[in-house]
Length: 403
Ligand code: GLY
Image (cartoon, rainbow, N blue to C red; front, side, top):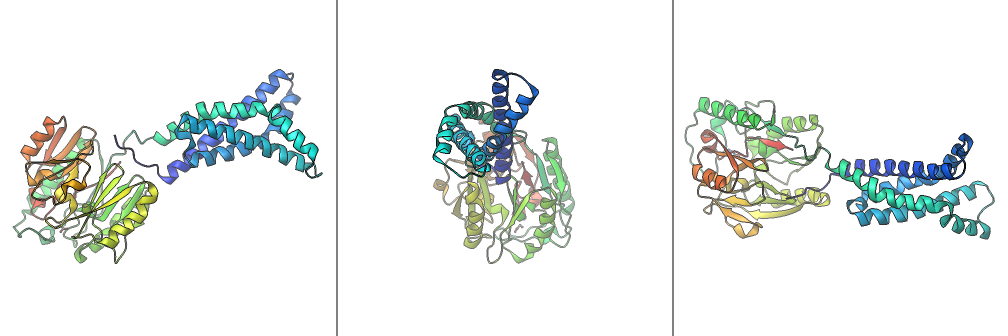
């Protein structure tokens, strides 16, 4: 099972929610303990609230910082966070209260501080540890996994241009493209994604851009981040404009690869937190460097892979849901670079779209590979994409999956 790193916005919201709610729980618990033991009167309740409120606000801030540094991921991290935050909040609460009297700090004040740390505020310190380990940990898990388990299954697609048959060719001889068949195959591909539960969204059609149907080359999605690419061939550069607008409208954060960097989405293979990037065709070293700069701070590892025999890295290899990289041996120059590699019997079987943890979409031109994957326990959905294969396209390039 691969785990994706948390986006900054997710980490921040988890830290704020965990910190504020946990500190509130500590505050209520401490006030109630003293309320019950010191005589339950309304006046008493207000005085207790006022006494502990400064410490509790500081505790909330410290818990937020603890969340940001990842303390709530483990029970012992949460316990240390509770101990340190409880002690600091108690100390600062007393210091602020004493200085508030305007008499400055004195030896007596130090004495008072030490007494409260092992006296009145001990309840707050213990409550901070208990709440951090129990409620804090639960809240952290809840917010960080919220909706990550429910896959956002959006697929961006782009209708074929009427000039599809003018698309770029690098390794194949040009053969006539049956436009009507291409349209039917594209409809079938879209229907297959929809049948698998994807909400399919169209990027506006671009008739003057022959290769625009291969929308995957224009953007790569990493959790809530969309990286707009810098296509490595002049005729495709205009494709990114509408795609940028579409991903921004979905609320994704947008970063860009810019010239002299070039990078095609078809060269980017995600396997958990490892991002393999094909180099030598449409993607250059500067493009990979820029992508690495964007992704490494987010917890990804970017691995460059020289590609010579095919247009894109993903024309040669893709990955199964379990992270095994698959490809046809004749196209893969460096199988050893991948953690786990499995050879498939057909060239068109190299490309699969992961539909779920147990299902993949594959070209109908690769029945033996489909049988192999079924024998490995996967449900395999075949689709006809022969007209796009004539243009060095494959099942992956026809959509961008956002989940
Ligand atoms: N025909 C697809 C490409 O060259 O980008």
